[in-house]
Amino acid sequence: MTYCVGLRLDGGLVFASDTRTNAGFDNIAVFRKMHVWEREGDRVLVILSAGNLAVTQSVISVLNEQMDAQKEHGGASLLTVETMYQAARVIGDAVRHVRQIDGPALEAANSSFAASFILGGQIHGEPPRLFQIYAEGNFIEATKDTPFFQIGEHKYGKPILDRVARPDMSIGDAAKLILLSFDSTLRSNLSVGMPIDLMIYQRDSLTVGEQRRIGPEDAYFKMLSKAWSEGLRNTFAHIDSYEGVVET
Image 1 (tube, rainbow, N blue to C red):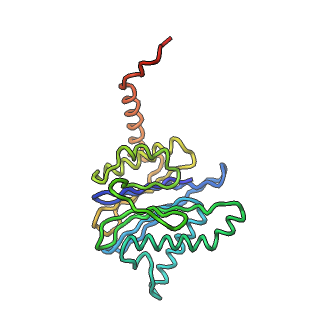
Image 2 (image 1 turned 90 degrees about the vertical axis):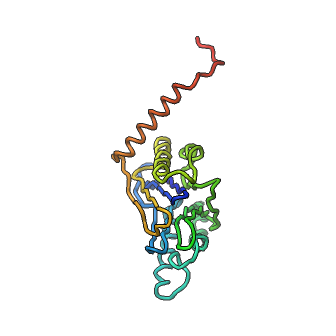
């Protein structure tokens, strides 16, 4: 399984993805699910992927082949579109293309065409934008009311995002929030695993910002997890008990 998060802020974007891929309890591997393209001074695009690994890798390969072909023959690609909306359309078309090729064989084997993506970034001339792209190739865009998207095993990490995420929060607080969301997910679902890939993009920089891989021994993540657990226990202890229970 997978867990990926993208958060759009007034000051930029924060992305994170796990790296665990399961094909059974005894077949666990590490694969990167964060893909980054940059044309410095013009655009930065980030894609997070979840679902059937063969399907999502095929979509990414189609996008890379389009970029290579565009250099020689022209045409639309993630490096030539003029808006993030057009970039989302390119990815949606790539998803439909792979579905047309692999969908019938998957259906014949009683397997679903499982793929979803988060696209975020900035192209010169417009603000940073964030999209979620579905297996059908259609998509939605993040707003101030809903500034984040999750794909994969999202239910354990969603409550804290619902309570805390705001477009006007600092990028440092946003990175902390996303990592706490991962901490909750890692504790509750073994199909999501470290290391975590984290990327921070500063608005209008038009260059890749901080990228790092966070493993089990990462000092900050260990501190964060411990402090969050202790904080929850302390808060729970200081809330008045339910008075309807008669102690025996």
